[in-house]
Image (cartoon, rainbow over all chains, first blue to last red; front, top):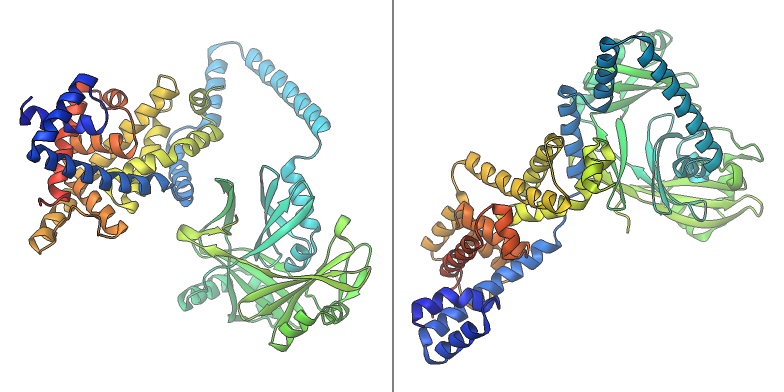
Length: 381
Length: 176
């Protein structure tokens, strides 16, 4: 073989794709030809560089937020294209228009009866879903109850293996994500979902929207005031998804919460900036006096007093930490309380065993990271 | 129920399962073809929008689906670059060389530098050579599979890889 033939076979030689006789011929030529040898070296070096880059590429994975953007785009697409319900409906319509009306009507009724019976049977056999179980565990947790200033509202619950993720919000709209160990039936961690602060322009617009609402106008007529200092960003429409076993919270649009006070009464109005309207106005029970649970009644002061028996908590308080929330668990957790402390940007949870009136743990509550396109991912391992 | 059947029922979880299984493959292919993470992210979305739209039309098993996904991804990459009009990748490497940038044969460069050089060299290839290199060396597919994906004879795959390697070698490895 001459050099031209050899050069054309060098890549196949490198990839070990040549027949034994061809391979031998190439090797014989290479021992005698320095030009082809150099070419082989250069090709080997090139392949080495490509392999190195390919190795890095192999480790790359699609970012989790892509799924949310994709879902959003597909939702928009499906508005212009009938989805499954639209198709089923059009099929029913077609069958109705094509034959006697009682046949499809009877079929629909029978299908409904079968569906309800099956659902009832399944519900009776399997009991609450893992999502419902996770939600119950979270709603009983003293930390979540403390952060919610009472009854947490469950926005979404997802289960992945023996882990449950429950997204809740408080009466004033702050959102938390709780990680549940379903096997143990307990909350492992609670995350606070924090949003970037509002701009001055957003505050002014929110004030104008609030003033145009009839309910807020009534509060203002009774001496209530809207203050830009008491406006805060709220997680708006929150969705929870599990991507590659990791919880990701996704929010859309901007919601603003504004506090209105008249004497000792406090209201929180939720304003949708995108739509330019007030979503709702609700009264918030302030945590001034007693923290209640069906089994126990403790004053907030008493709980704070118990936290001070712990040296670490005393240290936090000495450094200027403030008590912001306190709550008592429910159900299995009824003998446990949580006091939430805030020190600069850190949020600490102090757990109290109410039977022994002692601090059992002090933990930093992580804030969920704020990523691209309003994605919050706690980055759990 | 197979993945293809699940996807074609139209339920969200079917599409989600398909996405979960193939998102990294599509993302990696797009990244190898473009050398740009942001472009790869856009192409990933565009590819799965195509997949979503073609649900009723697709016929075949999961192997055929995988080949079709590669084909759609590659076509999306090529469309993306056509829309961008100017092929900035090739231009930058040439300009870098004009400004005194010298590729070397030794691996004295940092890992990142080597990878950037490879991305640039891949970017300088024309569409058909770049597709072959991506599938062969970045996705590690056998030549027979590449022939099926690109719908070309096996011999053409081999000759494209040969030409592509010679072109890349010219750009990446300095003569001693």
